[in-house]
Amino acid sequence: MTARPRCADATIFAVTTRSLLHKIACRGYAVRLRRLNGQVEAQAISISDPSQRHITRSFNGDGEEEARAAVLSLAKMVGVEIDPNENESQS
Image (tube, rainbow, N blue to C red; front, side, top):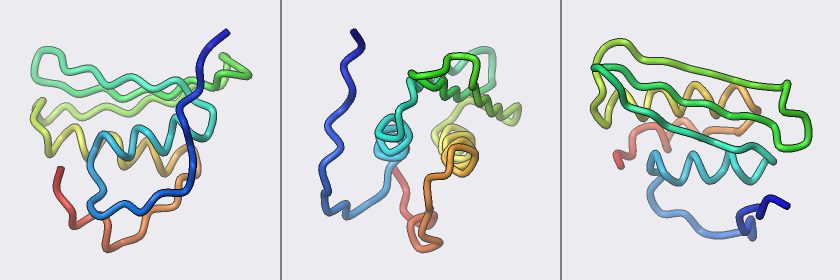
């Protein structure tokens, strides 16, 4: 049995790449962020239906800015609502 992350309401002061991944996981997805050969790949796979898979990639580098962009795109794909002011926060 896969343990799901705790998803209690919390006050988030700065939205980081890690906190966005947590928000995606709270929607019932297994998440993975990989950096490989100057690229970033973010994946979300539904725990209840593994055939439901979302993947985003950044080919512009493997830094934090590229990772954040990939995770933001992934969050939108799975229906995580992003406050436009949150996009300005850096992780």
